[in-house]
Structure formats: C-alpha cells, structure tokens
Length: 79
Image: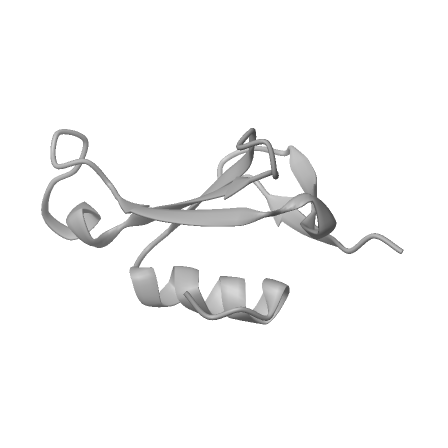
C-alpha cells in the first residue's frame, strides 16, 4: 500500500499528494544568496528524487531543522 502525504501550496488553493514510496533520495540545499536576504538566508529546499534521479517534489522550509524534522516524521530517516 502506498504512503501519501498531502502538501498544501502556500498562497495557492492547489494541493499535491506526494507518494512517499517513490522517494529514493532527499537532497537539502540552502537558498541561494542571490535569491535571499536577511531572514531568508536560513531557508532551505528539500528536493525529493526518484530512483532514476527525477525530481518528484521540492519543499521549502524555514530552517534545516524544520526540514530534518519533516523528513524524520514522514520518511522515518534522519538527515
């Protein structure tokens, strides 16, 4: 049975279901200095990749701690 998690897009009425069974790799990256300023500099992206390295989803978090907690809660792995 597949495991799905609902993701509500900020500022949009769209909702996405992410199939966690397809996730093979999670990559964390800090927001580019060119795209951020001040408080935004701590924001991180978590990109969820399939086994063939196709990006399934990218989620934005306020901090790496928030991203790690989300991955731990939903995928039961620690980054």
